[in-house]
Length: 189
Image (cartoon, rainbow, N blue to C red; front, side):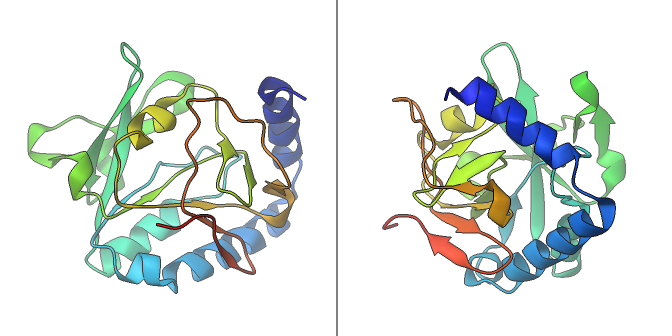
């Protein structure tokens, strides 16, 4: 099965999860992440502002602020399909862009270089135990990960974890996958 079809099917399943079940899974993922050494050892953490059907990241961001962690979120640069990360300390520093995505309002003082991000939470729709994922199809994160040398992790439910993701030569795995019940170290880091 190709990635486009897998992506569509997974998003359709995601959108059908009952709100109470979604909230329960989100709470479990947040607890597992925040109690991990990955989180505890990171000072600067990169993550997206989740769309409605994704696992919510707002409460994770707020937890990071309370722990005096620097939270950085990406701005997509469509011209060259790159990600630029900016530190935010309030949700008021975000703006709605295409497809109602929330992204940081660019500010040179808040720009954070790739090398300064300790932990990157990489979004996706489906994941395998080797750290490969199906994202949203733009390739932004695969481009960003090419020379990213710090820790990478993805959050997923048990239903999003599959045996095998079809890979292409440009696909790069994350180092860890966190589910509600476990942390999978996908490769030697």
